Length: 491
Image (cartoon, rainbow, N blue to C red):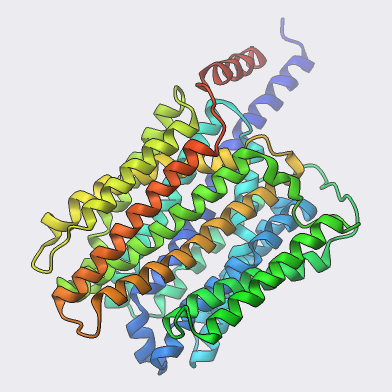
């Protein structure tokens, strides 16, 4: 006979079991939106410049404004999620992101669009670490964690790759304003889903006064670092402007580390977190992979359009195999993750992605999509999908629950900084190889060189995984125990 108490207990278990699925859906929508926004605007830049009268230099700020606020505020966003609650910060970020997207779509002057992009970056800096921390706390261990991070990896990469396709189609057939408007319904949908599906969670524990000096120093230091790097398209690395900017950024970050070691307030990031080899290794790995992947989208988009003469819409369509390959790799990571350690998947995925980039380095000025792009796209994307979820899982494994937001913000920061530095360094190297004559042959030589350097970055990431990350056995026993406990709880 089943008592009322047992029935109520079973109902609470069912409700608890249902909530993680809804939480995963909310996080997936959020991550897809943020990833899509990182790439959807790029294809529409020429039309944006013509429509609002941007100068050639001013147009770059449509990208830079977002990169600066997003990269500079990620650590602060992660800490805010830990201190004030993940759901609250997620709702705030989604509302801000959606509103900025709407305002940017209606912009009538360059300054308004740049300002809207900066506010979008602020919203994304709140949303990205809060969503990832929510995923980490909802799926702490076991097979459910492997599946959750596999889904997150798939939608994350699919959003970035599909953003190129969607941006091309919207720009060509609906107008450039829709590359801003497209985020509004997604933000509204994610806001509604988060409001209804995500539990508020226990009240956040506040250990003391917030570390305002540390927050100011880290935000200023990271922002200035990203600013100095992205401006190398105008000021070379050896110019006084770039050297001064990077020196000031380094001084601010050194001051931030000093403050974090000596502060009596609640630190923005506990430096002891870096003593965790999983956290440190995963972030260094992420830094190199972020640099390689950002440059690959840049070089291949230019190769397709400037060398092969492909239009914006078709260029976006030709990125679809990459998106599908990442999804395939993410599904494989779920299947293999039941038997292999995440570190093993990082090594295998990094090597496969590096092989794809090396293949990209063989592109020809007289090539074609089928012969020069499709094959390496599939190889690189499957490899990327294999390592995308496991690196997040490793970076947040063993982290105290009250620091998951901070760890998530740190991981997002390493990827953003890696993307900015990688794109600037590899872009400069490609430009130097191309030289002054922008013929198809010269352009191809530059792009191929940049992609080959990307393969070297990925090989370095693999070495980091092998030497820094701790060895770990197959997770299958722990996962099987988790599943047995869950089944016993249901019975």
